[in-house]
Length: 302
Image (cartoon, rainbow, N blue to C red; front, side, top):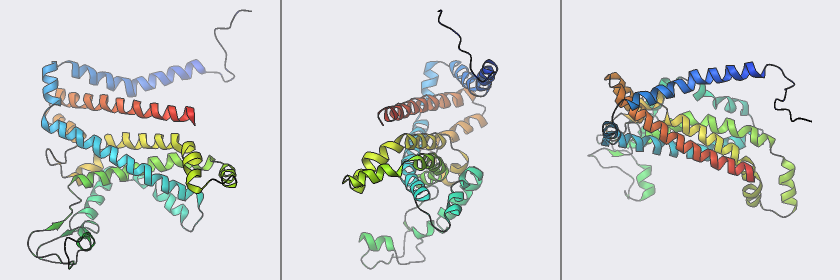
């Protein structure tokens, strides 16, 4: 009996849907990436290297990748706690808290950036707790805890404290805000599908809560956690609207890569913008590939 080279599916229309999918993805994904590569290839390697290796661009790369990785890591830890609380516990207001998770999805990024800047500024609700003006000495609980000020009173003179807005700390806070829903929404289905009888069996065999978590729960949900971390990292790397307001956009200090790309486009310097974007795309692709390999390994051995 000859081997059938073509296997017919029960559902018809495979060829039509596959062609539509490839065409749709080519127009939305492959065409812009191809245009980016073509625009970058128009310049010589010397000009390309001069643009991407300038101190301003290198500083922006370090800040974008460092802040994005830190924010995604924080979201992976606290997002797991939030998802675990929403799935495993029943308490008043749980649905309201669950709805709050989606606010960064629905809120425009510019609005979230303005709101975070307002509360994290020196005179904001949160920023005022960490910053003290010289004309108004107040008790400093930070100094009292650290021991640098024995009486806990700030002397008059220079301002003292931690500046959150218009600094790298503010950038990380903004990236945490927009990336948290990705981790929580990815982990919730995995935690809901986790069989509680397995945990009860481990407890009946003498396993402690810590052993149950690290040997049963965490390996089961790690692929979902890695997926949420990847989504939060990808969103943070390309974030623009919520960061430019709270960053301050100071050269060599709080400039992110998307801001540099926008500046080059405003200056009608398209080759420079595409060169910076190409390096960002290549580095992001390598980073995502490494994370996906870790995720694939975890799924294979879980």
